[in-house]
Length: 199
Image (cartoon, rainbow, N blue to C red):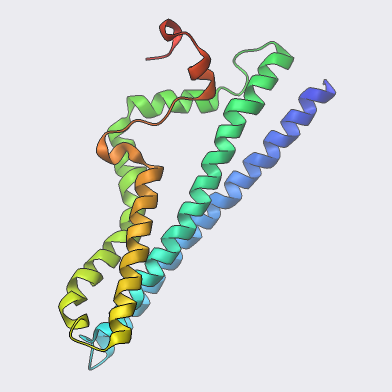
């Protein structure tokens, strides 16, 4: 095998391993969030003062923090995928003379366009809902109690709100399908004449 081809393939394999590792981290973060929520709910309802907001306000901060960590992994995975699609694949196509080399990224992009609604429900709603919905419910439920309490509790509520909004903005930026926006074109698609672009 040509040394140049082998070099590019080695880089591809290393990046794929990195994607798999970060994907496992994402599942760990989701599990950690759900476990933490269940634990905090158990503590809250077992307390004689379960209605006190100081117990509940941990949830928006913790869930939003884990959500932002999840998004960091997600953005990095997407960046690696774009690099594989826009840099490694074209180079391997050029070196091997085979335009079908590593067509997975382009194929999945076309599948995404065909199955837009299922993708929105799975990738665009399920994962962020596990982080954002509990935070929003707690913030709304504790609003009245917090602003009639001590100053530190108000500050904690505001911090939770800011982190929740940052998390929501991050998920929207990552999955803009929520408002009907489609993902941007690939570098290869931008270079193609309009008549040759895939529909």
